[in-house]
Image (cartoon, rainbow, N blue to C red; front, side):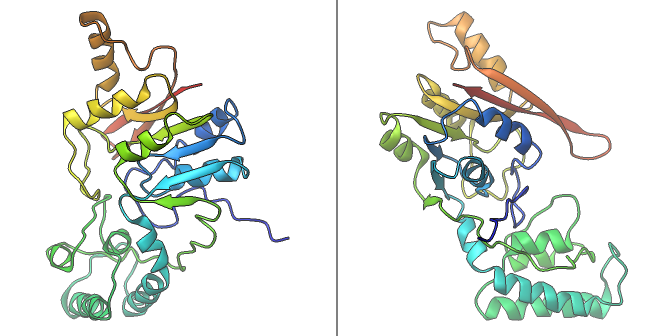
Length: 275
């Protein structure tokens, strides 16, 4: 029997995936049932859903693919073909060097032709041509960027990534209501971070949106992800002391991890979970 591949990061680039927190997340999962239902309300790249399924193969895992990551997965062959063509065009360019002149024109023409054929994954393409976690979503935006030879030297492999996982695409509130009263349900709650770049997400988030999410945490088992940039934890503590409302994080476990953005800047990722 062929051993199923366990992904340690999302197979295609996605801003905000929990790659660095994965080992701690898997360790914390040991406190939960191997046959429970795990509902990934803000699925993103699906990495948390994949991790749960790899730890607990008999669990029911529901991935809310609101950002349509599966479309990118299903078109990976087209992405690999385009990256292969770009790799050939840049075969004489050194790694990370700036692409200029006729070569730049040829690269952009190649991408434009691929778009005419029907599909270009610009987020994945961005990681091959642009530095510093910058992503574009259209050809027009890419055309304005300075591009570099950051071309991946092997094909992307997405084989089996979402095997055994139920995929849906709906408002997280609707999905929550559907499952909140069912027995043994654990919610994975990883909304776009407040006060960080959410440019690759499909919707724009305001403070009220983040506060709405906190309503889901009362009387549920959950994993909740945030960062010290959001100040959500401090806000909840303030609410608890200044108003009749309770703190949704009371009694939960907290783990933190420092994440470097550049040599000079960093922030703290936070995982809060309640059993």
